[in-house]
Length: 461
Image (cartoon, rainbow, N blue to C red):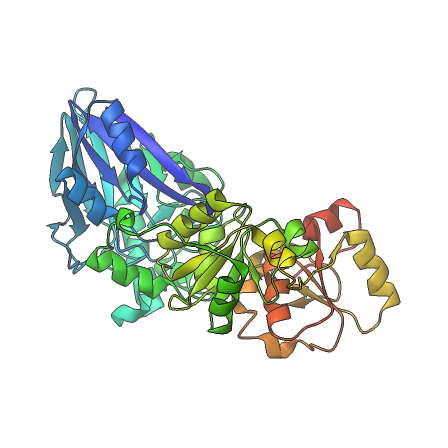
């Protein structure tokens, strides 16, 4: 059996290719599918099946394009009601790729249609070698039960189904079976996923907090407590995946815009998305631009912070980065790219147009200002779990995904310093605040990690 994991860091997304005797299946593919085709060709494999463990909410799948380019059959759980032509499977159903049997388990909980996929290499053993768990079981965590709200079911009901799926299906497997989920650390489909991208059933039985002995009622209570906001792009991606997104290759690359053209788009309502690192953005950027750096979880945060219908002007260090940004935006269903600013901020400045800046301050300067400037407001934009483990004393906690809706908690007339874990999300937050009229905003470089590393005091809880 040939097996390969494809891990996409900016989406914390894992997809898989399983092959045997000239045939293959791809599980949970991302939207751009060329890597799967390349690897299959290198190993002499024909892709016969494209399997979706569920209707993904956090990225747009490439199942339609992959099927059209290979003749493969798309596979969904029978509860998916997918509108693209597909094979609907239920508990115990199987398909074969060469000498490998893929056996499907219905594991609802994260979503009603969720399935897990057992891979059995019949040449080696009748016992499954691995299980692809989708978003049912992560390494160190389990899937959120609240993302099927649009289906008319409650998070509590789904959490109960998740408990049953885990205990009746996944934990009934031998300890040695390898576990490969659809996401890793940073995914918004879980709350505390490990940075490890694979494990075993036994290791998760021992170490995963959600699999420790507890009643069904207790499991429901803890898995539905303090859930973060559902990102705005999740329903869009579910709909696209149910219908089958149009092939990514059919979309033209972003057009190169001169400063005058870019300015006209911005005046008509487009948003400038600056994909450069925080330090470069802070040193000078197009006024009112939103900073979401390519170096972090760009696609997830773009989908969270941007409206799908809003035209976008990409600001990048060259056409290659602009095209990469456009691809990553399409991975979460954001396709309204008006173009990219050719020549970047230097072209903008050379044309006589002004640039805005965001001061980048180290934690030592933050500490000095905290003592010397009584009116300073410090904003921590990390998630609740991160904040609870330790934060700068006296900060206001407003998670980045809620900053726009909760901005009324902040005073735009006061000097403001923003920090996160390391400086990536806080830079995005400073750009959002600047768009809302905050004029004295600084980004704290190194974030809370640098504050702790400097030995400064922290508060917990």
